[in-house]
Amino acid sequence: MGFDDALNKAKDLAGDNPEQVDQALDAASEQIKERTPDSVDEQVDSGVDAAREQFGQGGDDNQGR
Image 1 (cartoon, rainbow, N blue to C red):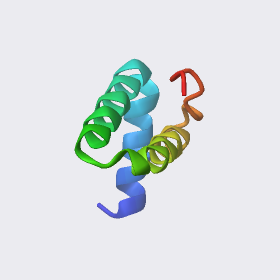
Image 2: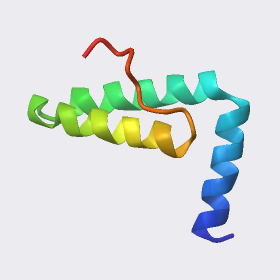
Image 3: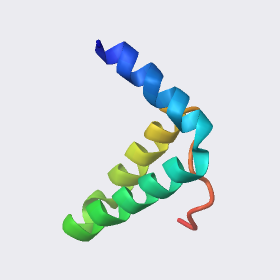
């Protein structure tokens, strides 16, 4: 399976389970932020927003940033 195939499969799964994907991205973001300096928080948020867009969920505008 190539990268594009894996990405498409992940998108399909994300479309079927948007709440779980959202929770997983939030949890991953928090874990990364806890383990890295505060100076990279903005980049982490940008990465999470990009992941949400890749999975067809749009950016995360409700995090209270």
